[in-house]
Amino acid sequence: MHAADLTPAVLAELRRPRRYPAVSVVLPTHRSEPDNTQDPVRLRNLVAEAKNRLQADDAVSRADRLDVAEQLDRALAEVDLVHAEDGLVIYAAPGEHQVWSLPRPVPARVVVAETFLTRNLVSAFTAGAPYWVLTVAADRVALFSGTGTRLVEHSGNGLPLDQVGPDWDVERQERIGNVPSTFTDEETRRFLRSADTALAAVLEADNRPLYVLGEAAAIALLDDVGTTAKRAAAQVPRGGLGHASAAAVAEAVRPTVAEQGRKAVTELHERLDQAQGIKGLAAGIDEVWQTVVEGRATLVVVEEDYWQLVRVADNHLVPAEADEPDVREDMVDEIVERALDTGARVQFVPEGELAVRGRIAAVLRY
Image 1 (cartoon, rainbow, N blue to C red):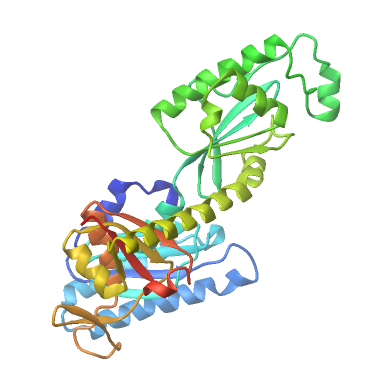
Image 2 (tube, helix red, strand yellow; image 1 turned 45 degrees about the horizontal axis):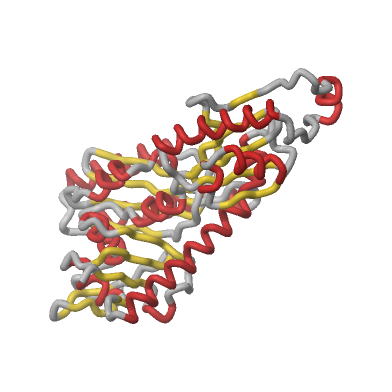
């Protein structure tokens, strides 16, 4: 399964407790040679490590050990490394297994617990929040649905909308692959007004961030005759996309989507600073854990790939080593899961963004 298959309901199902042992195998993968040549070896080594941990775990019955080992083998047979993305997650528990391919880098890990390690999927879901891309030309307006870096053309609600003007030179269209920039006639105004109405219906049913791409004159006219394009997260003057493929549109909008992501990180920092100013901020894994358990967190911000071995001592989390008794290796994941279960929003930021806050922070409700 892919990140596009993730929904809040799917994530909630993956977060529910399993009968021990619930095994999570996480592997960074590569899309092309030569980096991808070692992915099969690394994957087999991680699966072998998972089996060895089951073998050495006295808390796992022989029946469950054999069952989960078989589930791991089934998952391994389903993995398609030929079409790998940037990360792979395998889940296996008694009676079940799942394989997820993610368009985001992940750290190599094996975790055995009572729940699956879902934070990488939550991160992919958050980063892959859906958005719309509208391309505007004199003879065609098309809408694309985006998640992460993937776009597919939307068909419905009257879109895409095509117009063939009676005075346009068809031979010139075929020769140069586009139509003249005629954005002054009333027929074009009516055409774009119809496109605005169609777009409004789409946004009313599914209100996502919107990016508008097209010649500057086309975007200006769409703004003039309608209202929906004014709500766009960004307008990008870019010609030649009237009949472009989804891949070409995705490439054209990618820098703008990335810039919006950077702006979102800046806004998160501002919100954390505001919360700190009114003493409504928890920082560091112990403080955040305390507030999440109490249901006081409304927003949890975590650095990508942050995890830490801890143990509970006197109702506080303290750093631990792997060979210590009662060590918790998936506490960050537990915090993410508990936060989501209590209605908090979870956002991930690049490594280093929360260095002064202990790599994890929470805005409090009270």
